[in-house]
Every structure is written in C-alpha cells, then in structure tokens.
Image (cartoon, rainbow, N blue to C red; front, side):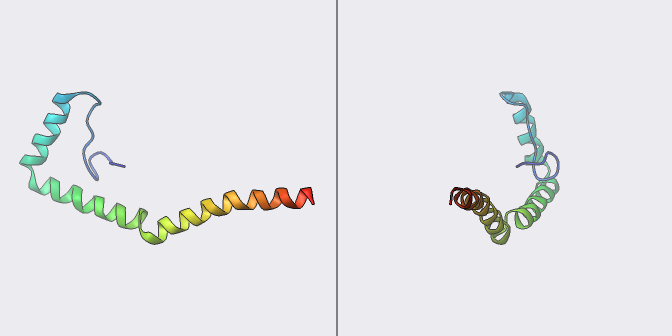
Amino acid sequence: MVRDGLTGLLFASKDVHDLSSKIRLLLADRDLRGRLGAEARKVVEAEYSLQTHGAALLALYQSVVNPLKEQNRVGV
C-alpha cells in the first residue's frame, strides 16, 4: 500500500540499516513527513472511500452469485 517516495518510504526487507536511515530521514525532514502524509490521505480518500469499498464488495458478491444462478438455469 505504501508508494515509495509518494505516500511513504519503503526499506529493504530485514535490512535494519536501511530502515534506520529512512526513520532518520523522516525525523529530520518535517516537510517530507507532511508531503507523504498529505498524499497518503488523498490516496485513502480516493481509493478506499466507503463508496469505493462498497462498490467493490457488491461487485465481488455479484460475481459469486451470478455464476450460481447460471448453473441453476442449466440444471432446470
């Protein structure tokens, strides 16, 4: 979910030095923290809104139910 340099910072898996450097960078740069946070909020509001989440769930539900309805018609 993190978009490196846009909504947050990624670090190499199991690399404590890389993680430490990213934390130090964020601690030292208030503007960077603000930009990353603001962009992350935009992404969440656009991609994970209640409406978007509801529409995705409804589409998933319909994709499961509709094939079952088609199978029932064939078997009748």
